[in-house]
Length: 211
Image (cartoon, rainbow, N blue to C red; front, top):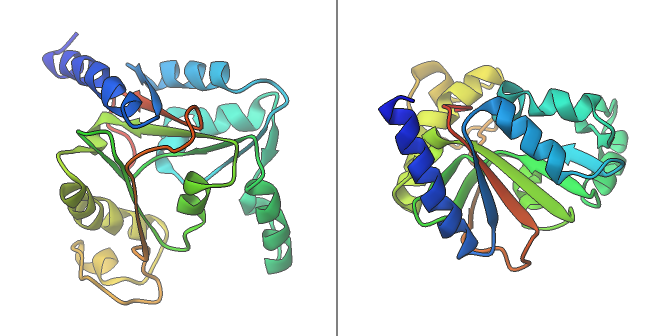
């Protein structure tokens, strides 16, 4: 095991305790394959499952495992009209399990997210009975302020490129603190504690994932 991976493991063990102090159960998985196995163990067969937009879920193979697994998947991308999307959202917020990543997490065990429409952070905050957050160790930051800076300067520009959005950061590669109609930095949410023990589970993966 390389020094970097060994450090990730030690760090993961430390973060499990930090998240636990904030009412969130956490697990450390060395690889994406281990993370897929953990997700399968956490979600009972037949559960209704949905997810927020996440490169991490795709990269780990978790999204594929959900769609092919013994679950009742609710895929918001399947909606053909605004009316269908609204009706589908009603089912999403009542799902048994909601999976997402986090834009960043702090060394004190806080989850920090910046969102555009807000549907992802809304389900993190309330609605689905259980939330599973999957994050690569590259998303660790020292504070909420550092997390927000990381999101704006490191994560948002490539995300806007991926989504073909017309924002200053998509063309310049740097945050322009914009008021663009395409801005994905509209909602800033810091989850400093889960008020309902057992609702939020964090899976840390010893790989660099997402943005």
